[in-house]
Image 1 (cartoon, helix red, strand yellow):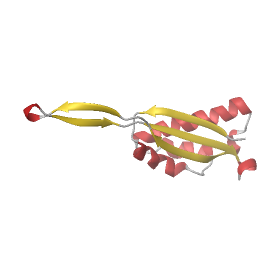
Image 2 (image 1 turned 60 degrees about the vertical axis):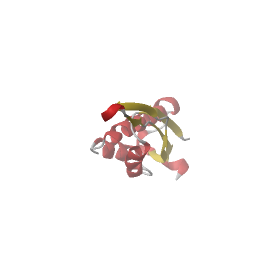
Image 3 (image 1 turned 90 degrees about the vertical axis):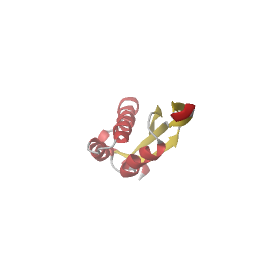
Image 4 (image 1 turned 30 degrees about the vertical axis):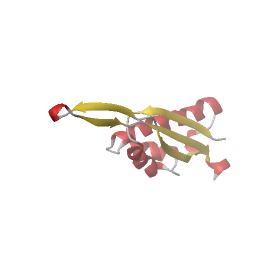
Length: 114
């Protein structure tokens, strides 16, 4: 039985979030958590928290064994963009786009999905 965890409105662009998600897609949950722990990018910490939540959901709600879990699906979607303005020379303003993303991770049992 697959279990899903979603992190919404995370303050990082979807492009940067996809870099960390591409590394862990299809791996075992424990192996992916270890890989994310040592990645230097900020998005890896956010993906790590969402993956940890998915593993805990599977363990607590569905009584699944943690060693048998793997990441069946992982994707990052764009969230809403906050628009801000910065004052510039001669009374002008320039746009600042603060992008957000939604990270979705679905874990599944090895025996059922693979």
